[in-house]
Image (cartoon, rainbow, N blue to C red; front, side):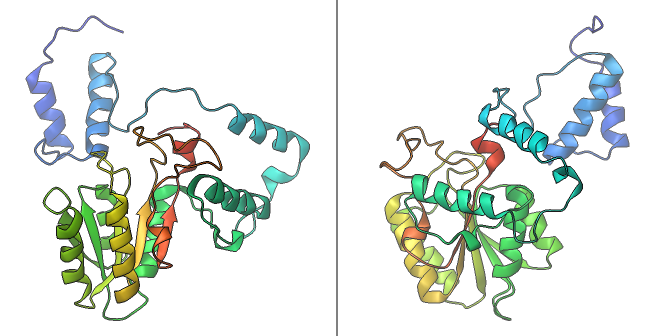
Length: 268
């Protein structure tokens, strides 16, 4: 790295902002990444990178070691496509994971592999927003992952949102019922723990959400990418309570989106 005088030259920053059409008041994660990459290249320095939430933890070895073993044992595996609905062994393992850590009995046929939690949310919203012609709106509990709202634009679905800081417990449930009762809401999406604020829904709130979803035929899309990371409770002992809270205990109208990259610390 070169010796660089701080603060950096404002003229260079202004030029890069203008060239990339970036407004720092509304900068997105991806725009920030582009800007920092170009600043690193121009000045020959290294920034502490936090925009993608990579903590630098070593991956749990059981994951890559098992992948290596399977690739060595099955020589033709890298040159074949997986089944459309997923590898049977993996689907059964997913159902077992859900049983051990959520205490839910699910069919392995209903455990569907996707290309990350973002893809899982995309597919879930596509289904929830198209089941009934009038119910083409996805309701979000904010603050949330902004990319999900971009996905609804791609899907040509409408969006509404509720700021969870203004509505908790009975106020939240009443606000949800006000929206659900219009018949326009196809799905409700939230993350628990919340991304990016780490707010967690209470069991009573999840119960109320589940009952309302059943009453008004709304699909709950529960993004548990940060599975078990509410460290006030130890959710990490398989087959023993306490279990990760979930709306699935209170309704059959749900998708649960689980991120294996977070579970095994590959990236998140």
